Picture 1 (cartoon, rainbow, N blue to C red):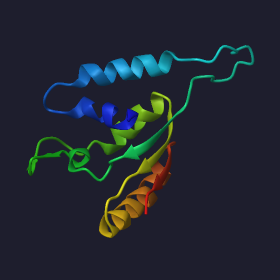
Picture 2 (tube, rainbow, N blue to C red):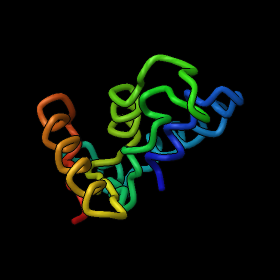
Picture 3 (cartoon, one colour):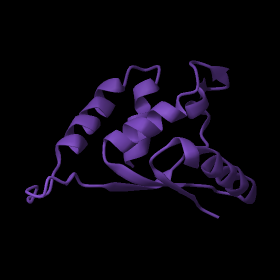
Length: 117
């Protein structure tokens, strides 16, 4: 899923290289007719964004590894052509947390955000 791959840029194992490749390749993809001066980049929908994962709060194996970077991850996703994310949940409690997260982020991102219930 594009968003998770982009999120790897902040991983402590140095996997930023892969996310940079995704960003460059997604930004370069265009449709064949750009004569209207429109942004014809392909748009992607992340259908399984696990944004509740602690890694987006900077947590790895129960320890704080870096500052929360969810806003930066979402900005990179949008810049790479992701237009919509569906935040996944595996339980009722996670569904409630996903809905709360989506509502809190809607004003701060250009991505269309939804949550599974």
